[in-house]
Image: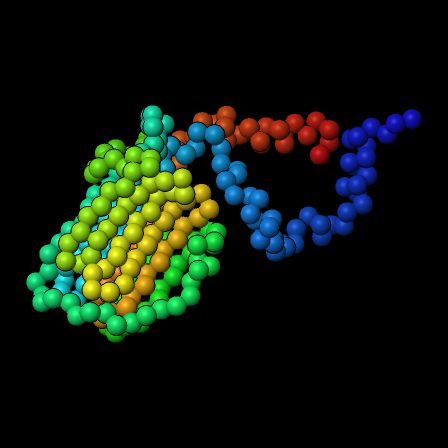
Length: 245
């Protein structure tokens, strides 16, 4: 004779001690956490997702070069695209001296996953800042934020230059990359986002430079989720009451 499934469950529940009602937390390994990424978000809950990357380099003379690239995806988005706005400012100081510093190593930085932030300095009076923000908000509708700048088409590169250095923004099979090479051997800055993760790298070889690599991930969740979506799992649990649970 086969034992009914509900009878087996009742026997197992009776065998548990009373203390089992309070579960003891355990630490999850990195491999287990990696398998949870991107799950447990109800359908239709995310109404807007955006990425904003900004890289700037300011030399000792006050010259600034950089770029801001952004992409926003909503339900009405037909084709997601990155838009680029160049940053070009003239300083009021005198010319920069030649940078004399040097750094070695770092070949393995191109093989990392996740978020990688690197600052290597071989000069004086420099400032470097790498930062990643994740902003999650709630709203009843997606924000109206028109995209500004030039469209960064797949496989294309946008360039710029001034007294601070040269800049390139490219989109390829490896993702989107912002690359700054400062004049007079002052150093370089790189920011790249791709399927494998995010890289922020600043190398300073001269003096008096200010460098920043900033990335913001902006998520808007629907505030008025339909009751059916919220209560779907609860209804399934309530159905167990008929079996005595």
